[in-house]
Structure formats: structure tokens, C-alpha cells
Length: 251
Image (cartoon, rainbow, N blue to C red; front, side, top):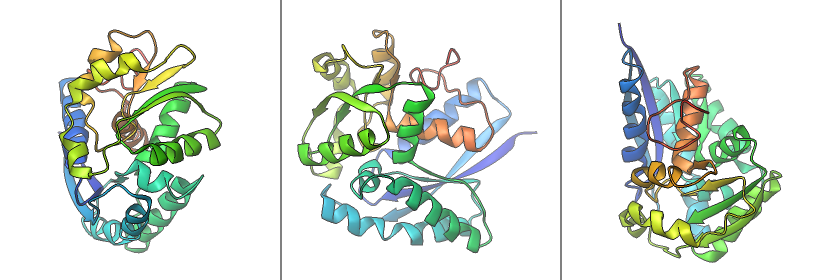
């Protein structure tokens, strides 16, 4: 008999990728774990432009989202906006995850909460990488906040590329296969791993295995890291086919 897991997704209102890439990866697991199935349930926070002020305002809505999703008795909640967390300052993912967990628990649903921000840090640590090179869709000031956040955890960012797209809908429309070319401009000479997309709105799933196949370094993304943490929290094997090194059988 199949075991069904309910996934609660806390999503920016203009995000068009979280409910595409996360389900795609978890459903792809059925190729190797046919006794599992996943359903997906979302609650949204208003946000159109990726600015520090709008991100902070949006984040205040996350408690409501956690409350709504806990009504559905989800098995885990995933907060899908890396920069909304990282722009709040070092360590905020721990504060956010703890607060949202408390909201769900007080509503009778004690479940793990995963943030894409915390998941990326944990994913890099799982690879035992001390230095990373990253690609972001953000304006450079926001990319710098992300770099500061990552480096506050003891991980050095050796190089970064900012695509400088502030409209969140436009971020979601970027062709993910362009990353196979963009990554060639990333200096990876000092890096231990490559973060192909430090943003769950910037699609990378169609490109990540293609890039992984051409690189000796591990390749991960905010989205693959989120799935890695979801599976770990559910005590499932953190394996998804064709999703980069972090989710590979080899790792």
C-alpha cells in the first residue's frame, strides 16, 4: 500500500516555480520509490517585486500561511522564498522555522518546517563544501545580502553572478536552459560546489543535471536543497533522479 505524504508550500503570490519544481522532483521519486506518493497544498503571501522592503512585509504573512496549511494536517511545511529569509539578517531561517513550527503545533499539527534559505545552508554543509560559487536572479544589493548570510554560517562565496531581475514574475519566466551557458562565466576555480540557482523562483531543474554532467564539482540549487531537507525530515532516502549531485544515488 502506498504511503501518501501531504506537502504544505508557503509561497510568494507571484511565485510560479515552487509548485512546479518541488512536485516534479518528488513525483520523479516514484520511478525509484513506487510505494510513495505526494500531494501538494499551497498558501500564498503577497509579493510582486523582489525588494528588501516588500520581502519583509511579505514575511509577516508566513504565520497565516502556516496556520492555514496546518488545518490540512500536512506532513511537512516548506517556506519557498530564500531571499525573504536571508534579507532579514544572519540566522533568521532558524527564527522563522521555529516560529512557523510553533504556529502549526499550536493548531494541533506538530510538523517539520523547512525554509529554502535554511535548506540551502544545510545542503552545502551536507556536501562538506566550505566554498561555493552562486548564480542569483537578484539585483546586486540583494545578492550581496545573500552572500553575507551564507558567509555568516562559515561558508565562503568565491564568486557570484547576479542576473539583476527585480520583477518576480519575470524571474519565473527566465529560460532555465540559459544557465548551462551562464555557468560558464562563473569562476569555480576556488569553489567546492556550485549553487546553480540561489532562488526557488528561478527555474533550474531542466538544467541542473546537464550542468552536473559537465562539471567535476557538486551542483545544487535552492530547490534541490529544499527537497533534500523535506526527504530527510520525513525520514526518506534523499534521492531524486536527474536532479544534481545532492539528490543523486552516488551522494
